Length: 471
Image (tube, rainbow, N blue to C red; front, side, top):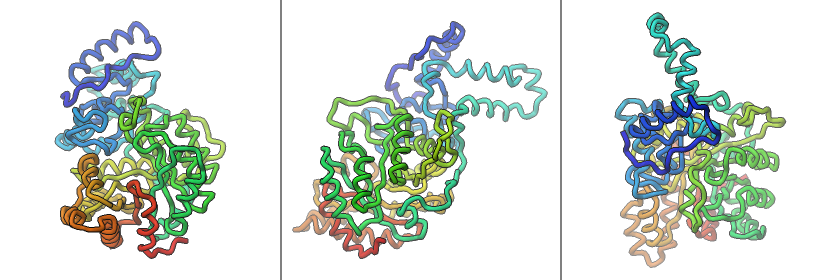
């Protein structure tokens, strides 16, 4: 039952519990620690995660993998497997995959370090489930027990579920959303923020993209290195006539910062928001920041959707003027199991994602299998999909992707072309254009998202080749 060692010691309570609670917690810690390497998070999810503790994830992700790891290695500690890949594999074996669809809450640090059993016993006593006679007389006892566990793991301030929640706003809130809703083939591009405070650099980048893209993403502290904030760069892009897509990473934002930052963004006219888990702090130059994360991508989407559609903060307060968001998330077409990835995307879509930007794609065949998996779960009509394209300019870039980015495959025939080419950069751009041509023929794809791969000056040439009319 313990597929991986514990990344950290079990949590201790922030506040001193009562003597009775300390006694129950000590028993629970010993038993669940032995069986599951329990971290004592205070909101146990074992029933929903195939009896593997998700807190074994170093990032503390409670709703699925981050996309940077694999079944063999974790992106934080390559010597250990990604625990979420094991959760999905066991859930598949036990025919419990659909139980992973429920959007789980962040930790409540008033409960962290305390046991869950005490809460279950107290609530069961209130509901009359402790009495054997009462249980035998009631035919729906099992359903009541399931409801009990759901209420304990889904507190009133969260109320997560496994259902699709269509956006309450019927009209587009941004030019990007309007273009997608009208069926245009959309092109977005990635812009790296400067490692300084000069606004002129951002404006120069915007000038290169003017009239060539529907919107541009501003990355948030890429590779866990500090840069100008995504929100500041978004404002500079907007002032230069480029529709911005604000990136928010769970690595950099806790639940308070997420709500305040996005409210500010909406007030400033930035409505497109891409929610990402983010690279681990250990990916940066150091010193490494904090683990685990406060939130994951699904939780960010859930919070922002409710902030927009229900006008409620996470703490239950009413928002005076609800924000307007067009929410996005990331997808992984090259995942080893397309069916598992489709379920993970369904969870994000249910939580609030309206568009998906995928990781890099270099081979259409796996992409088509991924789209088929999404179609089987009836997701293609619920979300807009933008395919990630990244021109490869050298064999060095190819080797880096093959060695450092999991699950991305590059066709051998292209590697051979690049190796024999006297002008590898032109060959890489030509291959990217061929790939875009194939992607445009896929009816379920809404557009492309072009990543510069460290060479933004080459983007205008590639974008001009597309011959798109951007209004």
